Image (cartoon, rainbow, N blue to C red; front, side, top):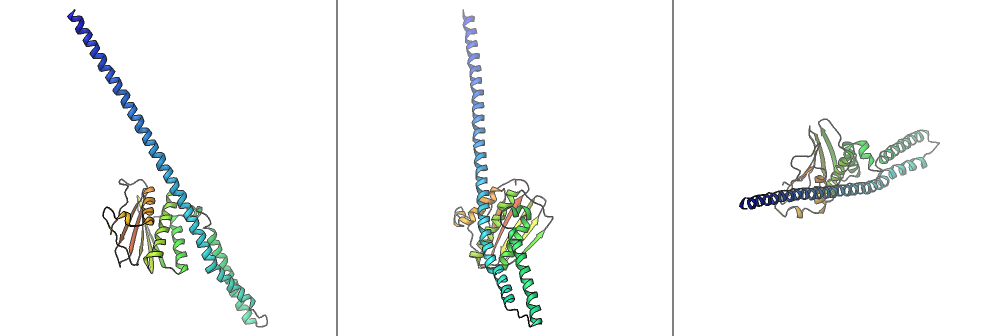
Length: 274
């Protein structure tokens, strides 16, 4: 009788142990599924946020492009055509020497207006960034800034140029536009220089001005004091797995470095330095 009781006890113990193992196994599966669901939700959220940022960048670039086109037509092309019109209306057919000079000058002015209009046509939508490439798009932006008289600009490219995917280049270009806009509005600078270094694993873009500079707090609350525009640039750099670094101090200008990696960097965090 005792032997039978022991056997029953062993069977019950084994059954309980097996039941616990089964429950534990199902718990592991459940937790694994929940983890996958959370990961999928986060992935979709990040993808949605990236698409929102991409769309916002496209809209902002289009808005700025339209303003640039409007200003360029008014300040440059309009004046060129007005001067050509003035030349044509003041031509005296009886003064042959003056006639030839003014006609030649008018042809040159009209040709210049046509070239400028052709250049502007490339900027009518954000596809021109993909067509021209990031470097030429930045060069064109700097040329437009210099023509406006806001700043003297220059660009230096080192290394073998290569392209990133369209979305990454579009967001990177918008970051550069924001940096340039901030420089024009706040830096009180005379010169703006862009250095592009193509390395094996990344592109390093440095935008430096000789303006008044800013004081950067590297403390815990420093980021919140930099302003919404700066925070947007940080966020966008992070969105494309890039690094965004500000170096500045009052009276010594500002240098901003945007690093874009071919592959995701090992530590995907933006930085701030003074």
